[in-house]
Every structure is written in structure tokens, then in C-alpha cells.
Length: 205
Image (cartoon, rainbow, N blue to C red):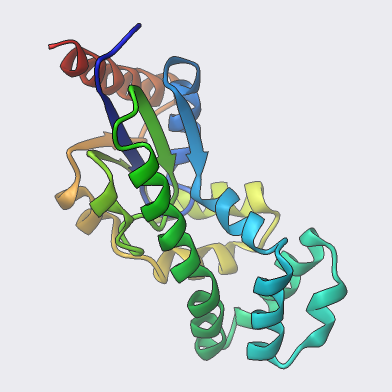
């Protein structure tokens, strides 16, 4: 379809709720899908970011590790020490917000629908750059199990990540659309497709 205008749409929820899966169902129908996690991972490949992390953690070995080793090491560092998580977030989060601000400005006059998916959209205040917000809801138990399997981490660590985020009900109360990931994948897919079709219809008005 050809549109005269466009939307930037956020798909979020807490870790493991299914926002990445939901975004995947509409990837071939929009102008692009960007993952907030992938932005974070790209930052971890930058030497200037690693230098800041190495200094903050007093751990110069981070500078010579491979990307997957870095992520594993960071999980170990921040797991039981909240002050270490503060250091990690102070290095990554401002840069992620700047990326979102710059990208939103560049795409302001673009056509079609573009998606940003990630668990921390509300926590970082990135929702202010987006036209619509979709929240995927699921239970903490199901989400933690899904997250542990996907990221090859313990359920304990998955629960810790969940608890460091805003309550999913709070996110839902601020959303334009809420999707309930409480049944099978077909149910999730149909809900997100219905929302996408509504957004497409608004662009044609």
C-alpha cells in the first residue's frame, strides 16, 4: 500500500511477554521492525561503550571479550548487585534514548508503519517519540519460562529481569492497544493483525 503519512508504533510488555513474536507477525506488512534489544547489543560492540563499562565495573577484561561473552559476563556481574545494574543502565540507557530520539526525528515525515519492539520502551521514556503503543500482556510465570528458554538463562534470573521492569498492568493502562497473550500463538497473531489493519485503515483516511 502507498500512504501519504506514517506512524511509529511501539510494541512492548515485560520481558518474555511475546512482543518480539507479535512484531514478527507484521514484519512483512510494514516498512520495518527494529528491536530495542538489538540496539543494546550493537552498543556492546562499540569500544567506547565497553571502555565506559570496563571503567564502571573496574573490569578491563571486558575490552577483549567477544560479544556473547560480554553479555554473559554482564549478567553475572549485575545478577545479585543492584548497584552494578545501575552502572550498566547508566552507560547503555542514555545512548538508547538518544538513538530513539534521533531516529524518530529522521522518520517524522516518512510514509507507512514502522515498529519498535522491546521491553523497556516505557522505562526509558521512548514512548514519547511514538504515535501508538501496543502492550502485550502475559503472566509472570509463562513469561519467565519463555525468557529463560529463549536467552538460555535461569528462571531465577528471568524473574529478576521481570521484577526490575514496570508492572505490566501499568504499561497496559498507558497503551493505545492491549494484546492478551493468554492462549496459543494463533490467538496472539490474530490480535496483532487486527490492530495492524486498524492502523493501516487510519492511514488511508
